[in-house]
Each structure stands twice: as structure tokens, then as C-alpha cells.
Length: 631
Image 1 (tube, rainbow, N blue to C red):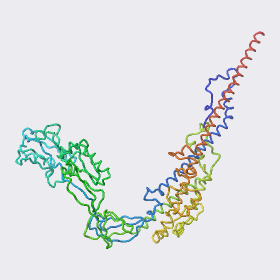
Image 2 (image 1 turned 60 degrees about the vertical axis):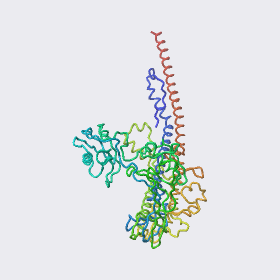
Image 3 (image 1 turned 45 degrees about the vertical axis):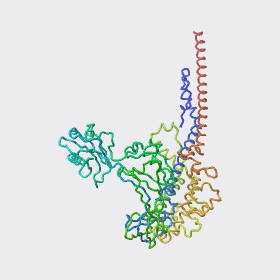
Image 4 (image 1 turned 90 degrees about the horizontal axis):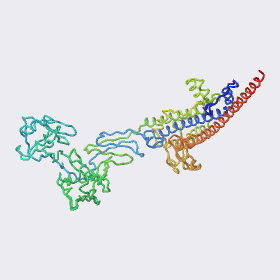
């Protein structure tokens, strides 16, 4: 809070030299009296800031409650969703064969399922396209002695040392087996007698995927074994290479214009030789051809599969001018198949492996000759826990709001001036300000209306719903000091959930038939709101009331939530556009004006005392002059 020094002039003053008066102290005393209105204005500004903070804290509490219980992204506790009240324990005799999940229309019960066929998508698949790593000249084992090379298998590096004892193909195979383990890598030559060009590939049944050859610290081992480096040193394709380079490797040709021309499900494609394989696949997958093309480096193979599963013509592909499909081996066609399952004795054929029958979603996972049993058992405990958590957190919110408006406000504890703070310790200041903030929203009308609206909303009947909150074991506390808090009879509530789950769900989560949804509430007139409120469940009513106070959307009346209009919310446009911020800005303008006036007043006092000093000095000079004549 501004002190005298906050408005003092910066002019250098020399005072009291002649009169002997402590002019600074006199002026300071005079200014302290003049500063009383300034201090009061500073206190008003501080109170407005504290009140703004208090409102914002309430808004934060309301928003946290709304985010927890009225947010569709929070599926575990959204009280607006019917599924919150439809909780089931799901079981399957073999979940690896068939799984189940619920919809809003699911009902408890048991079912039998026989999965005779799974749905598949039509596809073209190739076998391994690079197959082996081949040398381009004969090995010179004498020159290779003392060198080493690296075999990288599925990302793990193994160093193969070549000593003078390795003189033939068998010795090289033994060295590789020692380095990487036997049964992984098979080495042969093109002549079959050890005199041809070496080839390296996965051993049959090894289960390994990618293989890469490289020299160990540039030893030159690969060149002595016939791998000059100009050939391919991997057993898989690098999809970042151009189609031209991959064409050289696999042997496919382009059309006369240098393109690969494909037609897939009546969609035409042209891929230039300068395009990478990765870019080619991305273009196919992003188009409207309804297919996905992929290449696996592990299996070194291509797959072109229809996006739509099931039987029927879902994949049609042809090539014009180029030989890509033929030379990469994308010619092995497998037709799509429909899923077939017998559920409760009735056979169902579907194009997908997941489908809904009588409100229950069946997820087929594997074919089986055994009939599976699945069941849904109502989980009343889960629903009870959700409603109980909602009520408990509602009570906590109500208790906090009641405390906020019922706290006594002590007007003897006003914001401290800077002078008062100078006389106090930090702990004393903190204790004082805590007391000064207490009860700052005592009897606040907006919060009192919020509490009253919440109490009313919970006890008015819901159109079309025969039950009432009190009939499912939730009543208002009989203790007057609880002021609207709710009490749960757990046994009665659990019985209501078990015997009449639809009514319990509707009591809380029924949407208004006339004005449904969550985003419409701020755009309704008062008459429309009455209709909506009468038709909707209790959770929706509480949601609406909270939005009346904390909505960040501008409603039909041109305003946001009541509390945001009063105090704003950080991160929202209302942060600087609200009633209290305008009031604080107004106080700041008045304070600046008053500081200017006080500075002028202080200068006025000093000027008067300076004039007095000058006059006294003149008088003293005249007296001295007269006295000199008398001597």
C-alpha cells in the first residue's frame, strides 16, 4: 500500500536551517492526515483483489467437480452417461476365442457361442523378395585371414573373426556359428563345391529376421570374401531407397515413360522411378482405393490387403507396362472370408469379427470346435460406488460453499498500510491478512443462489421417471448445520440399483427430450430452461447450474458464467474482462490521480516553509544591520 514516499517530490529541499524547525517531520505529519483517503482507496483495491481471488477459487472448485462428473472424456465417472449406471461383470469361458463388451442396451444374461470361422480381408502376399545376400566375386580365404566382419541380426551386432585356419566354406560356417550361435545363419556358394560366390541367408527354421553385413573397423574382410560393397549387404529392402534402386535389386522394370502403373479397385496410380518405396506405399494407403500396402523387413515380404474384411470382391489390382507386381511376387491372392458364429443356437454370418447382437458386442478372436459360454452379471457394487463417490464429492463441495458464505467477516481487520507492515513481523503480517480475508464472501448472493438452486434441482421430480431421490435411499441430512448435504442409505440404494436399474439411470442421466445435450444450455431462454430442467435427470440439472456460474461460452444473453462475469478465470478471455477487474482498474486510476494531488500538496507545504525560511532570513539580516548601527 502506498506510503508518503510514494508521492513525494524528487526536488532537493534544504529546510529548517534558519528557523531551526524540523520541517520534514512537520510536513510528514501534515501529509499523513492528507493520505488517509489514499490508504482507504488502497484498502478498497486490496479487498477487491482478495474478493476476486476468492471467487476464482470457488470457480476452480466448481470446475474440478464438473470435470470429474460431467465430462464425457472421463468415462469412469461421467454421471451424464447412461453407461455409468449399466455396469456388468463380463465373463467368457475362453477369452482367447471370444470376448464380449456392452452397449447402452445390454442386459444381464448368459449366452453360448461357437466360432466356426473368422473374417479375413482379401490380400495379395509375396514371399521373401531379397532372399539371400550374395557376393559378386569368389572368396579369397588366404587374404581374409586376420580380418573380421560384423553380422547384425535383428539389431544385435556380432563380430566374426577370421583366422588362418579358415580356409574354406566349412571353416567360415564354423566361425559364424561360433560368433552368433549355431542354426541361425546358413552360408553356401553358387557352385556348391566351395569355389563359387558366397551366399548368406537365414537358416531354415531359425526364426530370425533381418541380416546386415559390414566390415569390422574397415578391415576389408568383406571384400576378400567377395562382397565388394557394390552389391546389397542386407536381406531386406531399404524403403527409403528409390524405386529405381530397388528395381535394380529386384529386377522389375518400368514402363516406357519410367513409371510403375497400377490400377487398384478402379483407382489409377503412377509412380516414377525417382520416388521412394516408402512414398509409393504412403500414396497408395492414403488414396480412396480401400487398400493398405506394407513391407515387412523381418519377413522381407509385401502385403497388399483390402481395408474391408469379408467375402466378396474387395480387392482388384492390375499393372500396365511395368513389372512391379510380378517381380516382387505380389501374385499370391487370398480371398476374404466372412465371420461365422452360432450364438444361442442361431447362426450369424458377418463381414467383421466384431458385431452386435441384441445389445451385446461379440469380439471373435479364434476359431474353435468347442462351444463357449459368455455371461453378463449386473455389477451393483460398481454402480453403488460411482453414485456414492458423486454424492460424497457433492457434499464436500456444498460444505465448502456453505463455509465460504457463512464465515464471519471482521471489519476490524482491514488491509495493512505499508507503514503498518513496517511495524510488524512477516508472521504477524501473514496472520493478519489471513484474518482479513476470512469471510470476504460472507452472505454472497451469487453463491447463496447457487446453493439454493442445487438443493431445489435435486428434489424436483423428473418427467417420465417414477422414482425419486428419497426412494432410492438418498435424503437430505436432518442436521440443520449440514445445510443441504446428502445422506446415503447404502442398502436401500444398492437394492434400487439391483431391482430397477433403468429408473435409477434415468433419474440421474435422462436427457431432455426437447433441449438435450450439454452444449445447448447456455443458448436457451429462461422459458426453455424450465422445460429442459423439468425433463432432464438430476446429474444434468447439477451440470446446468454449474454452467450458469462457470461457463466460458458466451450465452444467448451475451454473458458467460456468473462467477466469470464477476471475477474472471485465468486463461480465459474473462480474466481481464470482468466486474472486479474493472473495479480494480478504476481504483488504480483514482490512486494515481490522488498520488499526483498529494505530491502537489507536499510541494505546496515545502514551498510555504521555504518562503518562511527566506522571510526569517531576511528579518535576521535586517536586525543584524540595525544592531550594527547601535554599536
